[in-house]
View 1 (cartoon, rainbow, N blue to C red):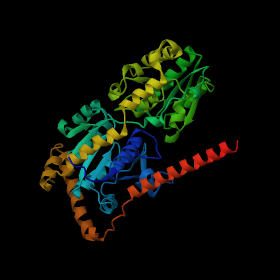
View 2: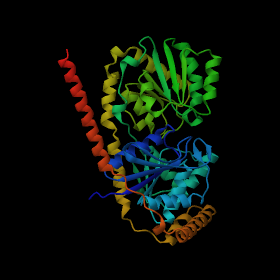
View 3: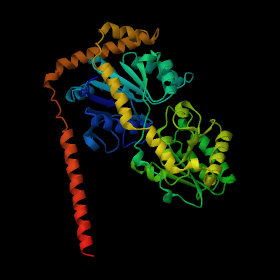
Length: 464
């Protein structure tokens, strides 16, 4: 199929400067899609001093919109209030496809609803797993069913995640593709000199929330410290559960054995990982978990709870599994400590070998290529009539279906009013970023710096 340039808008509440797998996926996938010739802009909510329009590496344009944050970096639902600003962005940037990320993101659901009211093609990527029995899961699953009833395609990051999403949203499996996460392996290289040869260091990098199994971490750390005097823990991340870790460290007087780093910038993650021998992940639910791939690329042996899609991520020689239970986590960690402590008898634990395997398995360029296929698949689909959209929403439930039809009807009418008040012809189209000129300028600068360094070295040799 002939490649053509598409204008893509990625939307999510979760983006830099916050840290996490969704944030990494958005940035790196966007960069690779731009390298493949597409235009990509990202829409997210403001974060601290990040407000307005910003340009990031490679000319990636990011809209940081004002929003009220309610919980875990997710914005307050506003239903129709974001329609005017989203419509302005879609028209200004001449967007063809709106791609929403993460079921917990309010911006994602609202952007997809508004895009469909404007007749734009939409894609949704699910990065998490949810249950079916708790109240929050039931409500979010119903919201997800509403959103996915009218998207052209959905993407999941693992086969386990696909099964979960298909069941939660009652989707046709043929409308859901599996595109895994990835990392930039060159940024996560082993550095044996950064490790403490006198101790075995266990690294934890995670949001400190219940879903990440911090309660398991709180009870497992003191037991490991008591059983293994040579082990120390380095824990990075922030969240409401951080107070539990601080109290645990004080209660058991482990200030010299447990280091709490707080929030870690994305650029500093490799520096933290290379300090460790073992990476510990205690998540209670996980669709993919980029963190364990980053750790394995840095040469760390991974210990993880056996939940969700984690079993699909790494080969068995790189990871030790545990049940999401205290005793099982401790046993798995003790086994890993024994293997790492006797590394000379376990050549398969070579950090460089781990890095080489990960480099071959995961690439953002491959992710972008597979995502691009989804875009081309839906780009020329015929737009269904409005009555068909209502039929899809009506099938979401006896009561919810009628409510969803009402929401869609109000949003559609609001779109008509906005088109009358601010016609698309009166909205200024944004200037295109000169990607080719930018890349050419970077190449010239690199050549200039290389020539300058070579001349400096030559002059230094002559002066000797």
